[in-house]
Amino acid sequence: MNCTKCKTKAVIDLPRHNAAFCTPCFTTYVHEQVAYAIKHQRMFGPDDRILVAVSGGKDSLALWDILLKRGYKADALYVDLGIPGYSAKSRAKVERFADTVARPHGVTLQIHTVQEEEGAGIKELSDLVHRPTCATCGTIKRYQFNKAAVEQEYDVMATGHNLDDEASRLLGNVLHWQDEYLDKQSPILPASVEGFAKKVKPLYRLSERELAAYAVLNKIDYIVEECPMAKGSKMLLYKEVLNRLETESPGTKHRFYWGFLEKQAKAQPAATSMAEKDQAMLHPCKTCGQPTTSEICSYCKMMSRAKVSK
Ligand code: Q46
Ligand code: ZN
Image 1 (cartoon, rainbow, N blue to C red):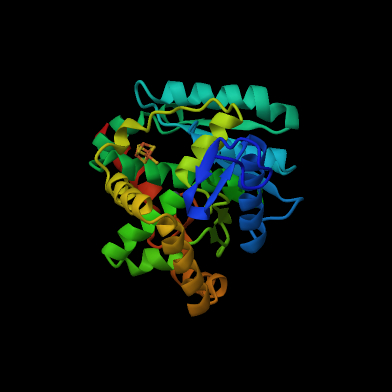
Image 2: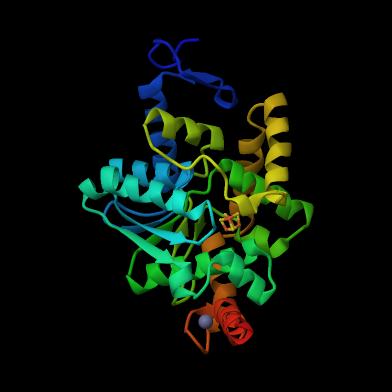
């Protein structure tokens, strides 16, 4: 198998593009996909300050790596969830990457420790508020990333969601006809109201397998294990189903997700209608001031319930 571009020995084949690449040509392909996503979706410009949400996994570290190598000013934020046997390992990977790769670019890594800031690790907190661990985790991460981006005046917040994440989420939303989620499923969410950071997903054109290969070939040391709380989740099932379809018919995932994005773009001028809807529905939380649909935001509700239960 030879590289489609330079004809030397290939290290990876990409059936969905009917191509194969050697290491340098594959790295170029990955960077080009990210560059296209940033430009095509108008995610950010060369002078914007970016806050990358990092977890220690392949996707977020690859994203940080790509943005830095492409000359962007990208700091990162890691949320330490306090999951025994997992968080310490993932945090060590992030810190190592920050020390060896990121800091020489003059950027910073911030760490938010749930145990210290919210008063308990994620499992204890979810028991206290009687909610599933992943729902509790999602509320805290969304809240803290948005807060950091807004308070420190970053132009945009970037996450490492890849094609598999987005296609499986789309499958879940379609299977349950979650109209409201479908409206908001986009690689870019504008800062529709004051207090909301603009959010982007520059890896939406790259698959999980491609990002794992990028990380390995570029010697990025990432945590291979999934978060233990993800076990049995519907998203993993949807990913398995899509992988089956992808093996039988390469390109299924990107045709499914990119096709949805094309139809969505034709159906509505996304940014304006979404901003109008948000402006009508959202107002500042009475406790913390972040935008919410109810009087008190879900993070503040959760934190007051946790305090009462203690
Ligand atoms: S980190 Fe958090 Fe995921 Fe772990 S606790 Fe669940 S939501 S599975 S992205
Ligand atoms: Zn609040």
